[in-house]
Image 1 (cartoon, rainbow, N blue to C red):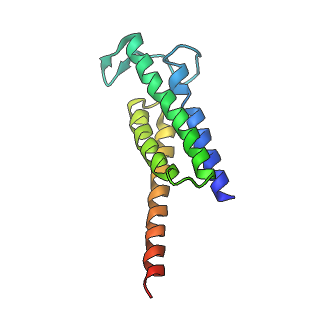
Image 2 (image 1 turned 90 degrees about the horizontal axis):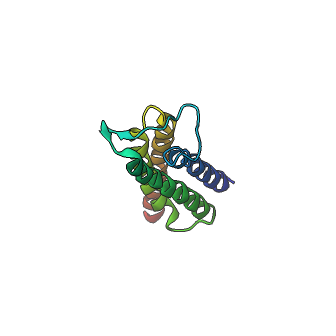
Image 3 (image 1 turned 30 degrees about the vertical axis):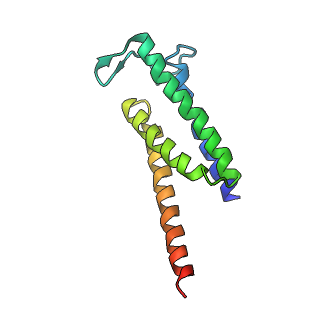
Length: 130
């Protein structure tokens, strides 16, 4: 049951990343997520922001795929989730303050994966020591 909830949460996090796609591509106007053409003080213009939006779209798709992988217990799912969360954290930090909640979620995902890895390692060490 926890695996299904984790997979669903990852997929939902991915779907929320679509905000970072639809706003730069001017497909939607959303309160709290203004259209802008600058990033880190540099004006990227409309084309540059569409590239940034494409990154957000790739993250969205990636998190949905990772969520499915977690539910299916695929070996690649957790490494993919870790990579996506790290990239997503960078994207969210670049989009502050609008993406502050996403940054927090990415940190929680990374901490959860770290705790899972430590737990698995300690179980392996304890189970292997006889």
